[in-house]
Length: 591
Image (cartoon, rainbow, N blue to C red; front, side, top):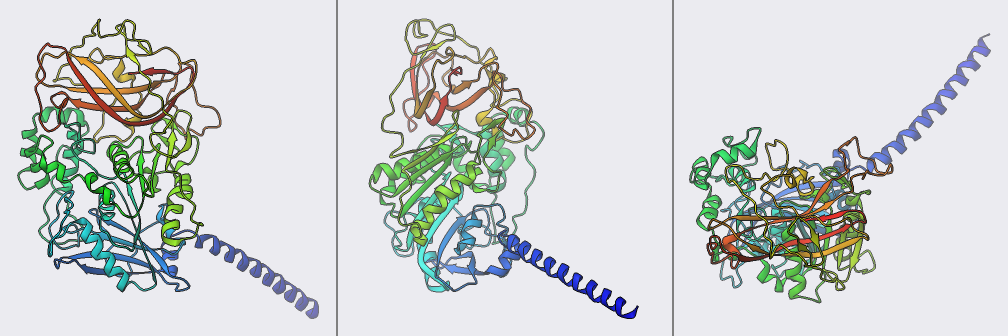
């Protein structure tokens, strides 16, 4: 009995040993799989972090967080983001979370990542200046964002161990402005720059003005927090008094009234708000903040990125690309425009398969990272893809929902087409009975203005850029012109120009124009599209493809406004930002 029992025990232990061995192998595979996720454990195993105060040429020190691979098997390229939104977390050994972001690809490839607070923000010294102008001829210790970039790169090359001598800069939105300015620094180690949704001109088409019309909701909601003065460096910005943060922004802003009432709410301490009010026209102040005239000297390779439905800086992406490529036709300048809201392509805000009730049918974010952004930096900083060139322009065309590549943007073979507004609300390629001879009339009430979107909201929505326009097209104070169902697909690529004869009974007004794709009444998504529980009825959907506003006193000049002649026909022409959209057969074009 004893022997048999012992044999049983030994067999049992041997069996347990096999189970434990299998479990150990399973855990090993699980660890390898988890190791590919850039979480806190992965970062601690593969990266080290140090913080530095880097002195600029005028003695001001900029706080910089440096993430460096522990491996010294090869030299590493450096990729930097300069930001007014905090380089946190601060302190050696404290890591930011990169999970789900495009930065994961660069960490796995062994890049050195650098995040820097621009001067006057968070932990950096100095005085902050919004969209600080570029100084063409700097003297002595004069600085601008380009020189701050140069001085930072010079320090990094000398002090960050294991770098390969090549630097890239990338940033979205306001950091996109700093990326643009970095391209003017002239440092030979700066090889590649990607301005993404870059702030470019805050009077013409970005963020706070469109053709001189103030985007009040954006400007006030942003600067009541961002613009508050900082007395000394701090790691965490204290929150200010809540202003106009109730449930219905439409009513709150309408009831607040004139711009002076908003200024009273803010007080006199927010410098940029005061400058915005003091410079109502496109004067020298606004022109000095625009980097475009200087981009003829933009030296590194460029990847300009934007969202076709970015409510903030769609115009800036197109304008920055055109300024670089137009002034330097032979430069390595590329444009990417996807079906995204502001910064959606970064990986932090979904996968780019949808916007609002619209679905694109594929993961546009992953395609962008794998096929465009990561290969761009690999080529110029890591030199690993054989020198293959990206397409000059990579554009996602909504409607048909496909990526297209072009040798230039707009495409060279685009044909201009005119659509005429018809007296009875029609829209046609034939002039015929146009509204020139048969004017349409609406009555607009400033006390009851047309809202930008439907429903009740306490913030400016990002989805409004593709919202269903049925809430607006049915209003009596909105003129609507609709074409017949299309017999073939119609693809629009490039700018949309509008040319109207306008009669108003006031000296000024805002003219808002929307280009709309009207879906068939029986339209529904195919079963292959995962709508993620969205049951919004798509039959008859009126998708806003593009919109723009013109403040009529600026119709001839943004610099020198002219009152509108009262009750006199006046020609008004302006341009909507570029579109990339296919109106499919059976759909209608609406204006």
